Length: 326
Ligand SMILES: [Zn+2]
Image (cartoon, rainbow, N blue to C red; front, side, top):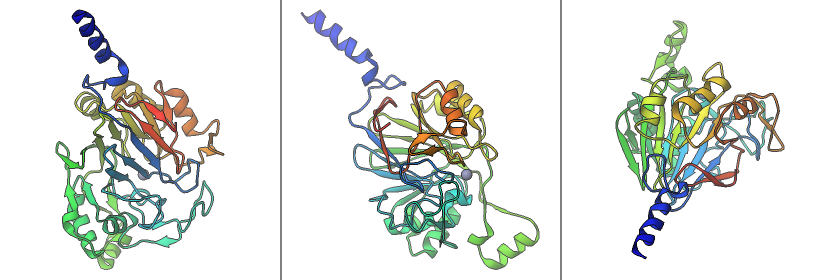
């Protein structure tokens, strides 16, 4: 009887449902992932923003960009922490969409200006959120948050190797191979004009990706804009053991579909992946359009791949498996 009980317990522990790839037991609950894109139910050209909700209620916004409709966007709700991979406009947000579905999926309308603060900084200030940034972005953002009426102490540096905690969620930054120059529209006019006149850009330290570890055991890699890098193997997989990845697939500025599929299948090896930053009209009526970069990526990759349809919530267990909404 006793031996039978032990055998049953061992079998339960070994079952994949309750285990993370690192071998630790997954915690209870699911992490809800919701895309805040430009067009309801679609995956559109400028979509980047995602909100993650931990089972403990902690809510994290990643790369607000253009498509979060300002700090009052009802889709945001409570936001405890904001993450940003780098300062290019499609991530920082020099402007935002006035209303749901304004413009077309391929060319959404972003007519509400947010310079010089940025959409991201306005959200950080209005939500009184922590702002977890890497590289040298902390000093620049402290200045920006203060200028927008917030508390500079909201900005917290999380440089590569370090981590920060928000509720039951642990956040760290990882390298990304990209650039990180801020547009002159966000800086002092005189300096901006001088830079423009000389064809120079102001770089604000290295760009980043993130690894976010949730209380149920889910470990999410957010690639940011990057090419293929060795750290996706050595750091993201071997050390942090990410079991869900969000990877940018747009080509030109980041990995394209085949490079991204290599990163997922050979380097990060998560249990599921969400495509991001496709720079195209990827869906119509919520269905993938054949021949798109997104469709190519979904076909190439060997783990379940999901498309972030705006407003739709996907739920992931601690092992990186989508259990609802995918
Ligand atoms: Zn980008």
